[in-house]
Image 1: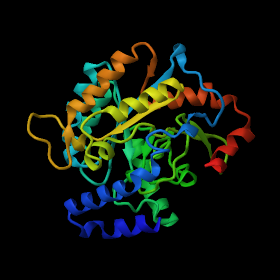
Image 2 (image 1 turned 30 degrees about the vertical axis):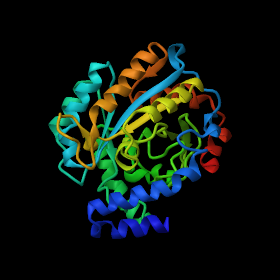
Image 3 (image 1 turned 90 degrees about the vertical axis):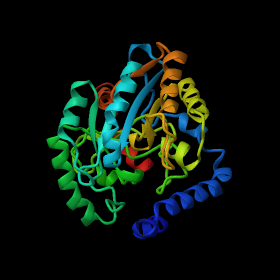
Image 4 (image 1 turned 180 degrees about the vertical axis):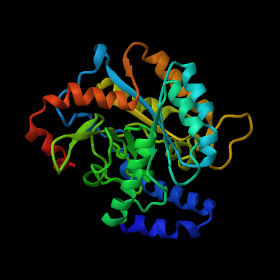
Length: 319
């Protein structure tokens, strides 16, 4: 974590082009070393909390989420919602409460259209887990936003995570982890393509952890500068064969919805559209598509409620 802390300390002083250059070089250095565990890690195909059977006899779960990192991303949310609705999909939009002014009317509109609202950290400054004191102070404000927005889901910025601390948020699920992603600032994956249960340390109950299992769009298209969805397709096919949860996290901030040439931190939205079309056509009738909160509720009531207490308690220790 020392490198991560130094990076976020220096980040405000580094021009954005230099930040992207350094991150691209960092990935290039690590890519060959981790080809055996990214984008597919064979050991991740085992569930933690026993056998998962998806409703309606579906082969795998398909979940769409978005982190809205900036005001620019917020302005593009309705374009993204329109695109998903065209294919019959719904998703969650996670907003940063204190980085930009979050539009109440946008949240209401998205909710009325069947989308979900979640909380994405507090300030997006890399300091949420800097110390217990910092986290504790910010958790109180995060919980207020969760209550005000009627949200039950949380994701940390930059995929930083501490599941033992996150349990102090008033959530039904968290999605701050991943099965395998050695290119993240905190690269410790949870090594499963299934949701799993995290019990509270301070009493009965717990929350569901929903790791993302498909590579993030920023990693693929901005840092790696991929120009096709071949990696998404390959990973999705593997998840489908193993009956897991295909959870994708994308960012409207980096999607270019117009005909103009994408900027240095953008990629054509047609790539995301192409992926949705692939899922819809290749796996018609095979996937269980719901909102993250609906998947978490299903798991809590139909899978984890039957687990012995001691089995549930092992989950955090295993991580």
